[in-house]
Length: 429
Image (cartoon, rainbow, N blue to C red; front, side):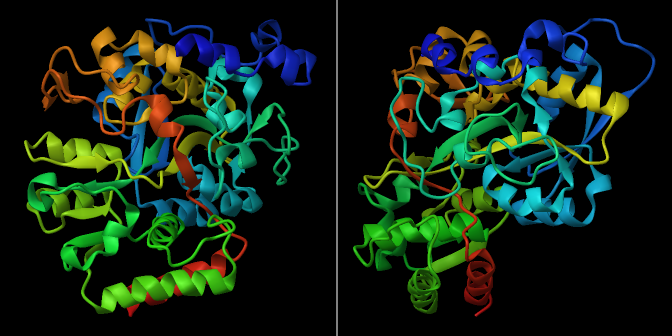
């Protein structure tokens, strides 16, 4: 897989329409060519704004060991990330955010486009981001804000998304995943095969959906279609009438007592599932990992209608310049160099650069997480705790099986303001 990934990646020389795109021209531009072992006395500190998804003490420690850079984590909810970028752009240096947020962030002019020529592994970034396809060439679903739609800008200071590839990148991708529902198989005790089960009265008071409008609305749309209530021409860009229909379905379920909670926080989703307060809910892969690491059965359940996908990446605040900008590029290059990618792969995510992550994983780990093979030995979580016993197979199978079955992406719609207002009315009702 990793060989194909490199072959399918972009070529700076052939695609980035600039003579400066060669490695030679990058050498004098602050690009990173290696990670020195001896650091200057000056402290290299970056304020890192994002959700808890990619934030980890283990990553921070390894980053400092390899580069001398220390991250000061600013951890907030997905919606609050966007609010902070718009209202307090000088309160952070590096931003970790999702691609769907870019339609709200780019017009603010509060974040800087990154220069692809300064990213060592840019050629090896999976074409999921650049072409909307797997490394094997298979096209994947792009309803919603698929990364390829918002990855490039027309110019360094442009607020217009480019239709083709340029050297100016909105976000350098880090991780992505194909999301589905989390379930407690020990409490449900029967197969779950469809998104429509989220609203099955059998699970009254035991179901939950996440309260992040641009994500929750997509989960709801998957449920509506699975139940045969409506077929969206493009569920990633609903009309007002379609938004009304979707919210009506959720509201009726809420009134009937279907939902135990509407979670916003990663830890809240873990606690709901681990306690058994919910048995089926919107969930993220590392949250399922966290529940399993407690010794509690939890499955990231593959569903016949496919997955709702998402992707995250890094950029910088408009206030970053000079040495801090150099450190930011150094940090991004380190993040794509493999250690962090392997760490996040072990949480059930996918690294943006597969070949480098593979170098930091055992053959058995790679086979389990990426190739859908039965584990030859016990599979450990990033903290070393037992995750799966030998013989286990990953939920949903291989990378190609999971990402190849993406139906839609988290989305900011043309009618986003209307959608958010209706969503908040639903939550508050």
